Image (cartoon, rainbow, N blue to C red; front, side, top):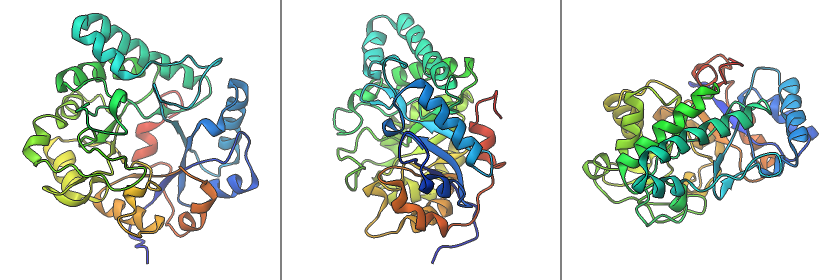
Length: 323
Protein backbone atom coordinates (compact mmCIF):
# COMPACT_ATOMS: atom_id res chain seq x y z
CA UNK A 1 0.00 0.00 0.00
CA UNK A 2 1.08 3.58 -0.69
CA UNK A 3 0.96 6.00 2.21
CA UNK A 4 -1.28 8.99 1.56
CA UNK A 5 0.22 11.30 4.16
CA UNK A 6 2.29 13.18 1.58
CA UNK A 7 1.65 15.30 -1.51
CA UNK A 8 3.25 13.84 -4.62
CA UNK A 9 4.37 16.27 -7.29
CA UNK A 10 5.47 13.90 -10.04
CA UNK A 11 7.44 14.76 -13.18
CA UNK A 12 6.39 12.57 -16.11
CA UNK A 13 7.50 11.96 -19.68
CA UNK A 14 5.72 12.43 -23.02
CA UNK A 15 5.64 9.76 -25.74
CA UNK A 16 6.67 11.65 -28.88
CA UNK A 17 6.77 14.92 -30.79
CA UNK A 18 3.03 15.59 -30.46
CA UNK A 19 0.67 14.79 -27.61
CA UNK A 20 -1.01 11.41 -27.83
CA UNK A 21 -4.30 10.62 -26.11
CA UNK A 22 -2.30 8.70 -23.49
CA UNK A 23 -0.14 11.78 -22.91
CA UNK A 24 -3.21 13.96 -22.41
CA UNK A 25 -4.65 11.51 -19.92
CA UNK A 26 -1.30 11.37 -18.08
CA UNK A 27 -1.19 15.17 -17.74
CA UNK A 28 -4.56 15.00 -15.97
CA UNK A 29 -3.44 12.53 -13.30
CA UNK A 30 -3.78 14.29 -9.91
CA UNK A 31 -0.16 13.82 -8.84
CA UNK A 32 1.37 15.19 -12.05
CA UNK A 33 2.89 18.65 -11.71
CA UNK A 34 5.83 18.58 -14.13
CA UNK A 35 7.06 17.19 -17.46
CA UNK A 36 10.56 16.16 -18.52
CA UNK A 37 11.35 16.23 -22.23
CA UNK A 38 13.78 13.91 -24.07
CA UNK A 39 15.30 13.58 -27.52
CA UNK A 40 12.21 11.61 -28.56
CA UNK A 41 10.18 14.80 -28.08
CA UNK A 42 12.27 17.00 -30.39
CA UNK A 43 12.58 17.41 -34.13
CA UNK A 44 12.71 21.22 -34.57
CA UNK A 45 12.35 24.40 -32.55
CA UNK A 46 8.96 25.11 -34.11
CA UNK A 47 7.68 21.63 -33.25
CA UNK A 48 9.14 21.79 -29.73
CA UNK A 49 7.56 25.16 -29.04
CA UNK A 50 4.18 23.83 -30.18
CA UNK A 51 4.55 20.74 -28.02
CA UNK A 52 5.34 22.77 -24.89
CA UNK A 53 2.42 25.10 -25.61
CA UNK A 54 0.11 22.09 -26.04
CA UNK A 55 1.35 20.55 -22.79
CA UNK A 56 0.58 23.75 -20.91
CA UNK A 57 -2.80 24.12 -22.61
CA UNK A 58 -3.93 20.53 -21.97
CA UNK A 59 -2.78 20.30 -18.36
CA UNK A 60 -5.45 21.26 -15.79
CA UNK A 61 -2.86 23.01 -13.60
CA UNK A 62 0.40 24.95 -14.08
CA UNK A 63 3.21 22.57 -15.00
CA UNK A 64 6.97 22.77 -14.70
CA UNK A 65 8.67 21.78 -17.99
CA UNK A 66 12.28 20.57 -17.84
CA UNK A 67 14.97 18.81 -19.86
CA UNK A 68 18.45 17.37 -19.29
CA UNK A 69 20.46 19.69 -21.55
CA UNK A 70 23.95 19.41 -20.02
CA UNK A 71 26.04 19.08 -23.14
CA UNK A 72 28.36 16.32 -24.28
CA UNK A 73 26.55 13.00 -24.37
CA UNK A 74 23.61 14.39 -22.36
CA UNK A 75 22.06 16.87 -24.76
CA UNK A 76 18.46 16.15 -25.75
CA UNK A 77 18.02 18.95 -28.31
CA UNK A 78 20.62 19.57 -31.00
CA UNK A 79 21.36 21.27 -34.35
CA UNK A 80 20.24 23.13 -36.26
CA UNK A 81 18.12 24.90 -33.65
CA UNK A 82 20.33 24.20 -30.62
CA UNK A 83 24.11 24.53 -30.66
CA UNK A 84 26.12 21.49 -29.67
CA UNK A 85 27.55 21.90 -26.17
CA UNK A 86 30.99 20.46 -25.44
CA UNK A 87 31.40 18.08 -22.47
CA UNK A 88 31.86 19.82 -19.13
CA UNK A 89 35.31 18.28 -18.82
CA UNK A 90 36.52 20.67 -21.55
CA UNK A 91 35.85 23.58 -19.20
CA UNK A 92 37.75 21.77 -16.48
CA UNK A 93 40.78 21.33 -18.72
CA UNK A 94 40.66 25.03 -19.60
CA UNK A 95 40.34 25.95 -15.92
CA UNK A 96 43.62 24.20 -15.13
CA UNK A 97 45.60 26.56 -17.39
CA UNK A 98 43.32 29.55 -18.00
CA UNK A 99 40.95 29.86 -15.05
CA UNK A 100 39.49 33.25 -15.96
CA UNK A 101 38.74 32.16 -19.51
CA UNK A 102 37.17 28.95 -18.21
CA UNK A 103 34.94 30.85 -15.79
CA UNK A 104 33.82 33.18 -18.58
CA UNK A 105 33.07 30.16 -20.78
CA UNK A 106 31.07 28.47 -17.99
CA UNK A 107 29.02 31.63 -17.49
CA UNK A 108 28.40 31.85 -21.24
CA UNK A 109 27.37 28.20 -21.28
CA UNK A 110 24.77 28.84 -18.58
CA UNK A 111 23.42 31.79 -20.56
CA UNK A 112 23.34 29.73 -23.77
CA UNK A 113 21.47 26.83 -22.19
CA UNK A 114 18.94 29.08 -20.46
CA UNK A 115 18.31 31.35 -23.44
CA UNK A 116 17.88 28.51 -25.92
CA UNK A 117 15.40 26.69 -23.68
CA UNK A 118 13.51 29.86 -22.79
CA UNK A 119 12.87 30.26 -26.51
CA UNK A 120 10.72 27.12 -26.33
CA UNK A 121 9.12 28.15 -22.98
CA UNK A 122 11.02 25.44 -21.06
CA UNK A 123 11.58 26.24 -17.40
CA UNK A 124 14.89 24.59 -16.63
CA UNK A 125 17.67 22.18 -17.43
CA UNK A 126 19.12 19.86 -14.79
CA UNK A 127 22.45 21.67 -14.48
CA UNK A 128 25.06 22.11 -13.15
CA UNK A 129 26.41 18.61 -12.62
CA UNK A 130 28.59 18.92 -9.51
CA UNK A 131 29.92 15.36 -9.34
CA UNK A 132 33.68 14.90 -9.21
CA UNK A 133 35.46 12.87 -11.87
CA UNK A 134 37.32 10.24 -9.87
CA UNK A 135 38.06 8.27 -13.04
CA UNK A 136 35.79 5.45 -11.86
CA UNK A 137 32.17 6.10 -12.86
CA UNK A 138 30.65 4.60 -16.00
CA UNK A 139 28.01 7.31 -16.19
CA UNK A 140 29.76 10.51 -15.00
CA UNK A 141 33.20 10.74 -16.65
CA UNK A 142 33.36 13.67 -19.08
CA UNK A 143 30.06 15.01 -17.74
CA UNK A 144 32.05 16.27 -14.74
CA UNK A 145 33.98 19.54 -14.83
CA UNK A 146 36.92 18.06 -12.97
CA UNK A 147 38.22 15.81 -10.23
CA UNK A 148 39.04 18.91 -8.18
CA UNK A 149 36.30 20.05 -5.77
CA UNK A 150 37.54 23.63 -6.03
CA UNK A 151 37.41 23.63 -9.84
CA UNK A 152 33.94 22.06 -9.88
CA UNK A 153 32.68 24.63 -7.37
CA UNK A 154 34.13 27.59 -9.26
CA UNK A 155 32.82 26.47 -12.66
CA UNK A 156 29.47 25.52 -11.15
CA UNK A 157 29.12 29.00 -9.65
CA UNK A 158 29.87 30.61 -13.00
CA UNK A 159 27.32 28.43 -14.79
CA UNK A 160 24.70 29.29 -12.15
CA UNK A 161 25.34 32.98 -12.79
CA UNK A 162 24.78 32.44 -16.49
CA UNK A 163 21.53 30.59 -15.92
CA UNK A 164 20.30 33.26 -13.50
CA UNK A 165 21.01 36.04 -15.99
CA UNK A 166 18.23 34.58 -18.19
CA UNK A 167 15.88 33.85 -15.27
CA UNK A 168 16.57 30.12 -14.98
CA UNK A 169 17.20 28.32 -11.69
CA UNK A 170 20.09 25.93 -11.16
CA UNK A 171 19.71 22.27 -10.16
CA UNK A 172 22.84 20.82 -8.57
CA UNK A 173 23.27 17.09 -9.07
CA UNK A 174 23.81 14.30 -7.97
CA UNK A 175 24.00 14.82 -4.21
CA UNK A 176 26.05 13.75 -2.28
CA UNK A 177 28.25 12.79 -5.26
CA UNK A 178 28.00 10.18 -8.02
CA UNK A 179 31.58 10.19 -9.25
CA UNK A 180 33.12 7.47 -7.05
CA UNK A 181 30.58 4.68 -7.61
CA UNK A 182 31.71 2.71 -10.65
CA UNK A 183 28.37 1.29 -11.79
CA UNK A 184 25.61 2.98 -13.80
CA UNK A 185 22.47 3.55 -11.72
CA UNK A 186 20.34 3.27 -14.88
CA UNK A 187 21.24 -0.42 -15.07
CA UNK A 188 21.51 -1.53 -11.44
CA UNK A 189 22.73 -0.75 -7.95
CA UNK A 190 25.77 1.51 -7.52
CA UNK A 191 27.77 1.61 -4.30
CA UNK A 192 30.19 4.16 -2.83
CA UNK A 193 31.91 2.43 0.07
CA UNK A 194 33.66 5.53 1.45
CA UNK A 195 32.99 7.05 4.86
CA UNK A 196 30.94 10.18 5.46
CA UNK A 197 34.13 12.05 6.37
CA UNK A 198 35.77 11.10 3.06
CA UNK A 199 32.74 12.19 1.05
CA UNK A 200 32.40 15.45 2.98
CA UNK A 201 36.08 16.21 2.38
CA UNK A 202 35.70 15.98 -1.39
CA UNK A 203 32.41 15.35 -3.21
CA UNK A 204 30.15 17.45 -0.98
CA UNK A 205 32.37 20.54 -1.16
CA UNK A 206 30.95 21.89 -4.47
CA UNK A 207 27.40 21.46 -3.20
CA UNK A 208 28.28 23.16 0.09
CA UNK A 209 29.93 26.09 -1.73
CA UNK A 210 26.95 26.74 -3.99
CA UNK A 211 24.40 26.24 -1.22
CA UNK A 212 26.25 28.67 1.06
CA UNK A 213 26.01 31.30 -1.69
CA UNK A 214 22.33 30.48 -2.34
CA UNK A 215 23.02 29.67 -5.99
CA UNK A 216 21.03 26.43 -6.23
CA UNK A 217 17.27 26.52 -6.77
CA UNK A 218 17.11 22.76 -6.24
CA UNK A 219 19.26 19.71 -5.57
CA UNK A 220 18.89 16.34 -7.31
CA UNK A 221 19.87 13.19 -5.42
CA UNK A 222 21.98 10.25 -6.52
CA UNK A 223 20.51 6.74 -6.54
CA UNK A 224 23.86 5.61 -5.10
CA UNK A 225 24.13 3.56 -1.89
CA UNK A 226 26.67 4.78 0.68
CA UNK A 227 26.68 1.82 3.10
CA UNK A 228 28.91 3.49 5.70
CA UNK A 229 26.22 6.17 6.04
CA UNK A 230 22.94 4.34 5.33
CA UNK A 231 22.30 1.10 3.46
CA UNK A 232 19.88 2.47 0.86
CA UNK A 233 20.15 4.88 -2.08
CA UNK A 234 20.50 8.52 -1.02
CA UNK A 235 17.07 9.04 -2.62
CA UNK A 236 15.51 7.11 0.27
CA UNK A 237 17.84 8.32 3.03
CA UNK A 238 16.76 10.71 5.76
CA UNK A 239 20.40 10.87 6.84
CA UNK A 240 21.51 12.34 3.53
CA UNK A 241 18.46 14.55 2.96
CA UNK A 242 17.38 15.72 6.41
CA UNK A 243 20.58 15.44 8.44
CA UNK A 244 23.26 16.38 5.90
CA UNK A 245 21.62 18.36 3.08
CA UNK A 246 19.02 20.17 5.17
CA UNK A 247 20.77 20.10 8.53
CA UNK A 248 24.53 20.48 8.03
CA UNK A 249 24.41 22.36 4.72
CA UNK A 250 21.25 24.36 5.44
CA UNK A 251 19.65 23.80 2.04
CA UNK A 252 16.03 25.00 2.14
CA UNK A 253 14.97 24.55 -1.50
CA UNK A 254 13.25 21.62 -3.18
CA UNK A 255 14.93 18.22 -3.30
CA UNK A 256 14.45 16.20 -6.50
CA UNK A 257 14.83 12.51 -7.08
CA UNK A 258 16.71 11.26 -10.09
CA UNK A 259 14.46 9.24 -12.39
CA UNK A 260 12.67 6.64 -10.26
CA UNK A 261 12.29 4.24 -13.19
CA UNK A 262 16.06 3.64 -13.08
CA UNK A 263 17.04 0.17 -11.91
CA UNK A 264 19.01 1.48 -8.91
CA UNK A 265 15.81 2.94 -7.47
CA UNK A 266 14.05 -0.44 -7.48
CA UNK A 267 15.82 -1.73 -4.35
CA UNK A 268 14.74 -5.22 -5.28
CA UNK A 269 11.16 -5.10 -6.47
CA UNK A 270 9.64 -1.80 -5.32
CA UNK A 271 6.84 -0.61 -7.58
CA UNK A 272 7.01 2.97 -8.85
CA UNK A 273 4.36 4.22 -6.41
CA UNK A 274 6.30 2.65 -3.55
CA UNK A 275 9.49 4.34 -4.73
CA UNK A 276 7.73 7.71 -4.66
CA UNK A 277 6.41 6.97 -1.18
CA UNK A 278 9.87 6.06 0.14
CA UNK A 279 11.44 9.14 -1.41
CA UNK A 280 8.72 11.33 0.07
CA UNK A 281 9.24 9.81 3.51
CA UNK A 282 12.96 10.56 3.24
CA UNK A 283 12.29 14.23 2.46
CA UNK A 284 12.09 14.60 -1.34
CA UNK A 285 9.75 17.19 -2.87
CA UNK A 286 9.61 16.43 -6.61
CA UNK A 287 9.60 12.89 -8.03
CA UNK A 288 10.86 12.07 -11.52
CA UNK A 289 9.00 9.21 -13.24
CA UNK A 290 9.77 10.06 -16.83
CA UNK A 291 12.19 7.67 -18.55
CA UNK A 292 11.43 4.48 -20.45
CA UNK A 293 7.92 4.16 -21.88
CA UNK A 294 5.77 6.71 -20.01
CA UNK A 295 2.55 4.75 -20.39
CA UNK A 296 3.96 1.86 -18.35
CA UNK A 297 4.00 3.98 -15.19
CA UNK A 298 0.57 5.58 -15.60
CA UNK A 299 -1.30 3.11 -13.41
CA UNK A 300 1.28 3.58 -10.65
CA UNK A 301 1.14 7.38 -10.83
CA UNK A 302 -2.67 7.23 -10.75
CA UNK A 303 -2.42 5.64 -7.27
CA UNK A 304 -0.57 8.63 -5.83
CA UNK A 305 -2.17 11.49 -3.89
CA UNK A 306 -2.54 14.82 -5.62
CA UNK A 307 0.37 17.21 -5.78
CA UNK A 308 0.20 20.95 -5.24
CA UNK A 309 1.22 23.15 -8.20
CA UNK A 310 1.71 26.09 -5.82
CA UNK A 311 4.08 24.13 -3.59
CA UNK A 312 7.80 24.66 -3.17
CA UNK A 313 8.97 22.81 -6.33
CA UNK A 314 6.84 24.92 -8.65
CA UNK A 315 7.62 28.28 -7.01
CA UNK A 316 11.35 27.64 -6.81
CA UNK A 317 11.95 26.09 -10.23
CA UNK A 318 9.71 27.93 -12.69
CA UNK A 319 11.52 30.47 -14.83
CA UNK A 320 11.20 33.83 -13.17
CA UNK A 321 9.30 35.22 -16.14
CA UNK A 322 6.74 32.40 -15.74
CA UNK A 323 6.50 32.10 -11.94
